[in-house]
Length: 141
Image (cartoon, rainbow, N blue to C red; front, side, top):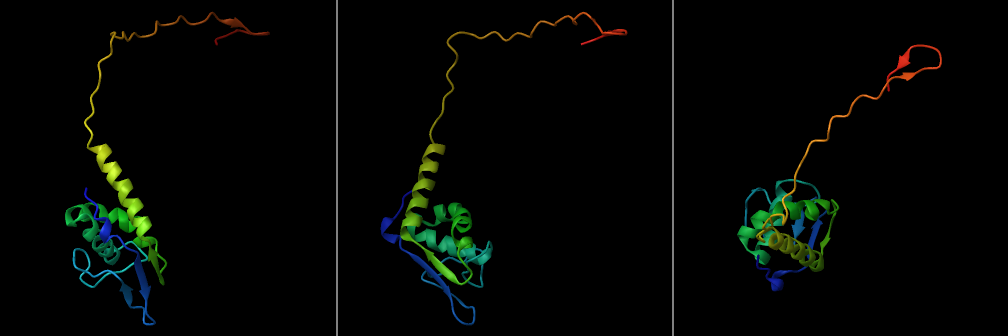
């Protein structure tokens, strides 16, 4: 995944007195919510905000793959009245996502054991002999 560092900036979200949503990100991609961008909960508007934050930074294909997790990690957690997702937070999150992608794409091999290992069943054990109780029949342990 290529990260366009120049496109990373603080994302500022706020509501006006009537509850209208304002963000410093244009809704260039309408994927989930035709009614606009939102924040502060898990939903369609917050998903589109996450998508529109990530698309200029990583490209639309990677943004579509990553935006739901970004929504959960940041956009949905913003207070209802608004807040800021810092450029540092976005950059750090994308670095972790990129590292996870790299690790997931690494080829793995399974090396054969140098010496064959024999797997055996434990031998059946005989039942212990009965133990005589202090005053009565034998007890089986």
